[in-house]
Image (tube, rainbow, N blue to C red; front, side, top):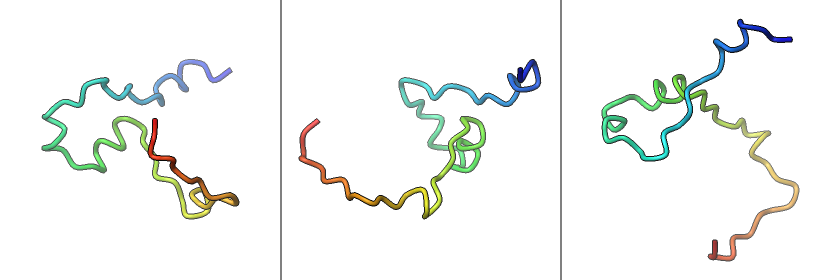
Length: 56
């Protein structure tokens, strides 16, 4: 039901290969262009801590 107006809000997809030109841009500009949001402290807190095994 969002229609055309909701389509305009979608950000660009993050490129698969990181362009070197991004190094000359401000991080805030990249966040805005690609719709990247930083989690708040509340969103970052975990009730059960995650332990990394060191393997992928």
